[in-house]
Structure formats: C-alpha cells, structure tokens
Image (cartoon, rainbow, N blue to C red; front, side, top):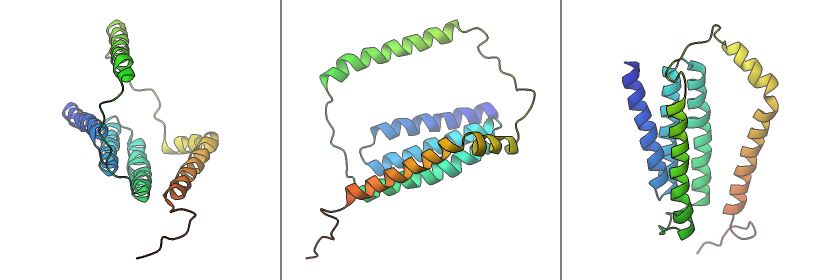
Length: 170
C-alpha cells in the first residue's frame, strides 16, 4: 500500500513540477507549486516524519505560497510572452543537461549498497527537534523571516504607481 501511495504522490509531485514550468500565467504556476508542496508533505508522511509533513503543509503550502500568490497578485503580473529561447541556451544547455544526467546515472549504477535502508536506533522527538530549531538555528530562522518581509516590501514598492500618489480616477 505504501508503494502505491508513494507512486501516486510522486507522480503528482512530478506532474505539478512540470506544470509549474510550462504555465504562462504566474497564478497557475503558484497553484502548481502548492500541489508539489502538498505532495511532498504526503511523501514525508509515508516516511514516518509526521512533524515534517505538518510543517511542510503549514509553512510552505500554506504561509509561503499565500505570500507568493499575494505578491503575484499585487504586482498584477500578466501572461508571459512565449519566445523561442536563445541559441546559447540551446547550444550549451542541452549538452550540459545530458552530461549531468550521465554523471548521475553513473553514480547510481556504481553505488554500493543501493536499496538498503534502515531506521536509526533512537527516534527524535518533537521536543528535541524544537530545541534545535529554536535554539541552535534561531538566527537563520529569523533571517529568513526578515528576507521574506523585505521581499514583500519590495513587491509593494514596485507595484506603486509613480511617486506613491494614487492615480486620478476618470
């Protein structure tokens, strides 16, 4: 049953990621990213990481994606123009992707002990996890919050009309 659920939600994750890339409207891309984040939460749940799954839904699929959607709507972004791309991207990008996939395939094929997994002896409690997050990693946690706030303020500043005055109604 776990394998079937894994295959289904891994498929949702991949389809959502591909849909994120091919969408022309930013709101549709943000909604596809919500599908990816929620699918990842289910995959975490299948791995037995309930706290991480709940944090994924609350923090990423909830709060961060609401902020992304809010900023996209605030900027009033419209559809992207489709271009044929640059010749440099085609000349360098495709061979680079093939080379990277070749390196990854080589590493996977030559890996020893691939497919063996075991659980660690002790299970980390939520209390231990919260001590690490809010004591040892407090500074990166707060810096991330400040960066998100700066990004929102930047979006508001970009979305203002002219010198900050309201446009005259006709």
